[in-house]
Image 1: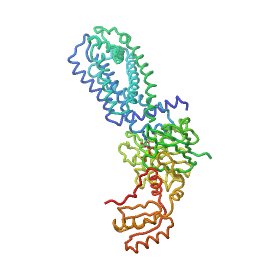
Image 2: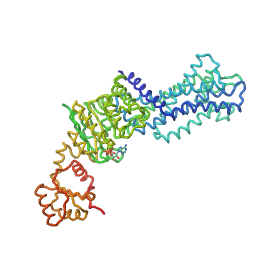
Image 3: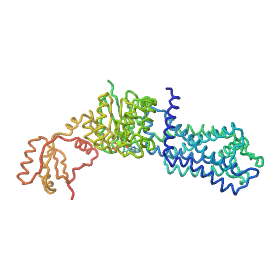
Image 4: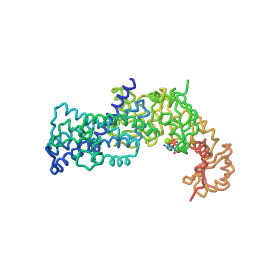
Length: 267
Length: 323
Ligand SMILES: Nc1ncnc2c1ncn2[C@@H]1O[C@H](COP(=O)(O)OP(=O)(O)OP(=O)(O)O)[C@@H](O)[C@H]1O
Ligand SMILES: [Mg+2]
């Protein structure tokens, strides 16, 4: 087996381990499936009945936002699991084995994609039930889902990096919440960014979360001529910009996470 | 034949704490080597370096012919390790834990599954094998962790306090497993707090203190090193223990030990039978009632205490009985 084959095989073994863990741990499963469903229902019925958008239903507008919000918040699970494993010394066992060291992280982030896929399916079904519709051709819709999962994968590496830098589960959870809230709410997820005051508007329009949401809206056909896209470049070119963001996050955070992993386990 | 495990001048510091202070080890292939030492002596640190988990600050070590730093990647296919604290996955079943380890040793899916079943059986976990580890007792986890070290049937095994937390039956069955493995040519390095275990299993024992090997040899050699016979007297009261202790002090060639709970006095002497006769004569003259009297060789516990107390400067268990 060459190094690459080994890295892939070991990554799959660790992925399998994590998926089994998710299946058996009700708290992880609840975070991945139940919570997103509750979100869809709450937003659809509570805000959906109060907020009027020109030319489209609020459900259509907000479902892609909920998709991305769920991705951002459930990436926290990646980090949390890593900090717990660090504490329990499980990585010591791994590191005495002739496995590819990268597999611990690739396996963790890949199992998160599996988890994210499950929660996107759940949200899609509930979304369709409360009135969300896909208006684009099937291949664009498929692209939309793939883009969401790609961003989810990239974002897992971001939280993995933060987790490996902080190491303590409680500290990580607090910091991750503090960071992810503004990331989600200072975006176009639930509000029209053009109605935000100047500086906040700039932040919201250049926020990668907004880019991915806008790209998803375009790919699912949840846009409307009565709601023009703001002029910021990433929103005007949302699909390529979302791909760029994902690539950039991967390019920066994959090596960083691996470096921090090595540091974290060698003490 | 080159030694299966070799270490030269290993040094490891944690800030100001010197965990290893120039440790040398040499373990011939197909033998059991015991590392003994008080808490904090550096046993775990040594094991972590030899299993590639830590890099030494200086010194070098090879295991199965591979350098633990430069050849760490290749070395890992040749060792099995079980750390001081069981590292098993709570949400996976016992079988899944072992299968995962097998896959990570690249044994293939089928062989991994087969090995998992064999080892569950060997460690008396067959029944629990399909339950998540979350519901295992401490000793069961420990056994599963040990089984993990054996998955690839590696030629060199490192076991850090393998029998801590095991019940007597599990402990003896692990001893049997180790004996079988060694008979088949496996080399085992184990650390332990149970001197009986070292006495029974290990061909060579290294006593470690403050990060150095302070004594090395077979159990017998270590006992000789600590000196000759002991007189053991059991009194009927603490008061007697106290008087006898002072009365017989001239016979002792080292620190006497008095156990206030059992009224037992242990006196290291130079000429066994003559000293015993003298002691009993003295006690008869003083009309002290002795419940039990005898002469015996030092135990490994005494070797351990004697060797390690001089260096720490804290005499252990030689205090006056307190009341
Ligand atoms: N990660 C660490 N950070 C700081 N100090 C450490 C660390 N690991 C070990 N030490 C110190 O190094 C010394 C040796 O520790 P080690 O764990 O090797 O002892 P040990 O012989 O295994 O003890 P025990 O019998 O209690 O398991 C101790 O003084 C310990 O405090
Ligand atoms: Mg230890």
